[in-house]
Amino acid sequence: MKKQWWHNKVAYQIYPKSFYDSNGDGIGDLKGITGKLPYLKDLGVDIIWLSPVYVSPLADQGYDIADYKAIDPRFGTMEDMDELLEKAHSLGLYILMDLVINHCSDEHEWFRKACEDPDGRYGKFFYIRDADKEGGKLPTNWRSYFGGSVWEKLPGHDDKYYLHVFHKKQPDLNWENPDLREEVYRMINWWLDRGLDGFRLDAIINIKKAIPFRDYTPDRDDGLTSIDNMLADATGIGEFLSEMRNKTFRPHDSFTVGEVFNEKPEELPDFIGENGYFSSMYDFSENIFGRDLAGWHAYTDITPDDYKNCVFATQKKVSNVGFISNIIENHDEPRGVSRYLPEAGRHDTGKKLLATVYFLLHGLPWIYQGQELGMENIPVSSIDEVDDISSIDSYNVALDAGLSSSEAIKVVEKYSRDNARTPFQWDDSENAGFTTGMPWLRINPNYKKLNLKAQKDDPESVFNYYKKLIELRKNSKYSDTLVYGTFKPWLNDMHNIMAYLRETEAQTLLIAANFQESEQEISLPSRIREIVLNNIPDFIRSEKGMILQGWQAVVLELE
Ligand code: GLC
Ligand code: CA
Image (cartoon, rainbow, N blue to C red; front, side, top):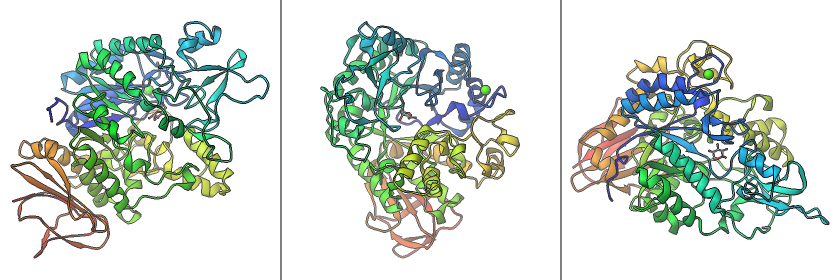
């Protein structure tokens, strides 16, 4: 594999609205991030992705952009952004922004002009279709990701509809139009020329629609069909993605990571191989495990064995092709520790175990803000406390399916995007030290105990364990193996054991974890040379190899 500058790095996602508020308005901001860069430097991360901070009505928390070349005043100014970039670069940190180009906001100038003149230049930037005059039938039966039809009346035109696969305030951009594509590339280059180091590509798989548009078999009583059915039918996304890469990212040697769901297996080398469209893309296999078209209420819980199978399947198909991005959570998912650890393992030892097994996989490890403290899901008592639009839709879907409101609340509690969006817990003072004002979203009540201040000087804290993992991946003694070593499952059939080898010619490391309360004996492929990391104080050798205690995780160098 050809070595790239970012292979041995560690990446971190910031959700700006909830990271740190510098001016007491209850909303995290760019100055807040800049002030905390030394914290991130000390943690040991290198690449930082900022969720959107562009001008936006925040209908979908900034994933609805009204001006790609300006910062929303709630987050700061362009000067603040320049300062952030400068400070980051002086610390050796790299900054990525979120590239949301499947859609823009209905308040973007392009869309406003499209409404004024649907047949003009900007009308062609979107997917606008005439209404069916006689039958009143919508152009297609696709269901938007946030519920309801993807078609909405074009403001000012009773006889026309526009397409939005997400919220109605997020009209889809028409990538079939070269004029639109060139506008987008100009905008990307404008940012890269300012010194930005790259992008995370939002919802990118959606830019290619199956054309001509047609109906698919309905999959719920609403008569609509999941967008997935249309996407499975769409071919040729590579033409757009390679054009974009050639005209923007490649000439800048920038880092890109794609939010890619549902890629076809044969597409992997095209996406992240040596000549791929992106540097990397996320592994969502564990996130999508147990999904059901009926809605969140029909999802199946994931067990440790399922988790292992998902992750290992990805490792097997990807590790020879390129670098996958490994995560346990992001701003769209519940907290990883609340999801992938069985209830009995939701304590510091369990949190360290989960950190160990995902962080040392082949690929690029990512940490989502607060994950390094072991932040958890937040309890929900009423739907009125919920901010996330997809939670509100899923709540209603659950009620329609016959769940009681308290059952539906439990569903929301488990999967809500609010779980990861609650403010960062800096200390035990009011509002967890996030703001001196009224936080835009409620703080997790566990902040009194679970916060950075309480963990910083405690050598046994989850925070200091994450620091150790980061140091380990960067330690010259192990980094070649942890970055480039092959991946091989070990004891794959053992229940509640997740173990794998990372190997180079010069070195073999074993990562092994016991996802249960009671101990289990494991065999080792060869003798132990060194105990590199252990999430508990004890280490018990046995004739066959070693005894893993409940929730123990170890990293061993073998002979
Ligand atoms: C991505 C984002 C999510 C957003 C959606 C629409 O999935 O991560 O937060 O709602 O795209 O832009
Ligand atoms: Ca603020």
